[in-house]
Amino acid sequence: MTDSAGPLFSELLDIMRRLRGPDGCPWDREQTRASLKAYLIEEAYEVLQALDGDDPRALAEELGDLLLQVVFHVQVAVELGEFAMPDVLRRLVDKLVTRHPHVFGDTRVGTPGEALAQWEAIKSRQAAAAGSARSVLDGVPRALPALLRAQRLASKAARVQFDWPDANAAWGKVEEEMRETADTLASGDRTRLREELGDVLFSLVNVARLAGLDAEDALQAANEKFRRRFTAMEAELAARGASVHDASREELERSWEATKARERDSVAGERAR
Image (cartoon, rainbow, N blue to C red; front, top):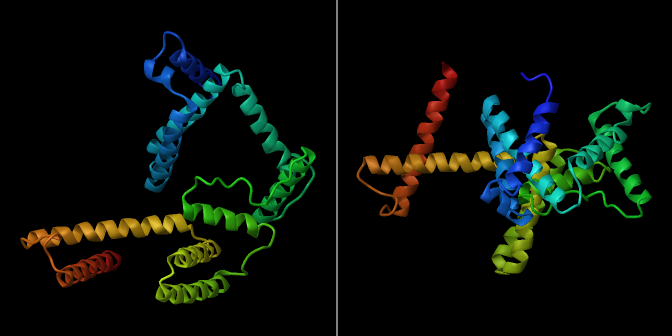
C-alpha cells in the first residue's frame, strides 16, 4: 500500500495536462464538459457495481476511473481560466472542517442523526450569510434515479422531523395510496393514475428507508431475480423443444411457477447443508 498519495496525485494531474496538450491524445483533447457527462455517470455506476460485488481490487480500479473524471473536468476548468485543483481541494477541506465542529471544534453531538442535523443547519447558515435562501431539500440532483431521489428527498425532510415515526406507520400510507390508485385505475383517468402510482412508489420508498433498507437496492435485487428466473424459464422451455415466443400464456405461467419452485428448493437445500 502506498504511503503517500501526494506525488502520485501530482503525477496524475501532469498526465492529464499532457493528454489535453497540443501534443496529447486527439480523443482527450476533443472532449468537452457536455461530452464527458455520460462517462461521469457511467463510472459512478461502475463503482456501485464493484461495491455490490465486494471485490476490493475492482473497487480500487473503478474508484480510480471515477477520480479520472474529476481530474478531467478540473483540467477543462483550468483551460477555461475558471479554477484549478487547489481551489477544489481548498473548498472541500474547508467544508469538511467547518461542518464538523464536533470533531474540529468544541461542539458535541451524540448520534449520527444529530451530526446530520448539525450539518444541515450549518449549510443553511452559510447560505443565509451568502445572501441566498436554502431549502432543506436542496442538494438532491434531479438527474438521480427516481427511487434514489425519492429516498434522498425523504431523508433530508426527516432531518427536520418531517417524517413517519416508523416503517409500520409509513406502510399505512402505502395502503391508503394503493386504495386511491385502485379507484383511479377503474376510472380510466390516465393523468390522475400517473400521479397516484407515483404516490404509491414514493410511499414505498419511505417504508424501505424507515426499515433501514435502500429502495434502489431492493428494486435492483428484484430486477436481478426476475432476470434470473426468466432466463431459467427460457432454458427449461428450450430443453423441451419449446420457446417463449411460441408458448401459450398458460404454458409460460406453468414454466414460471416450476422455475420458482426449483429455485426455492435449491435455496432450501443450501441452507440445510
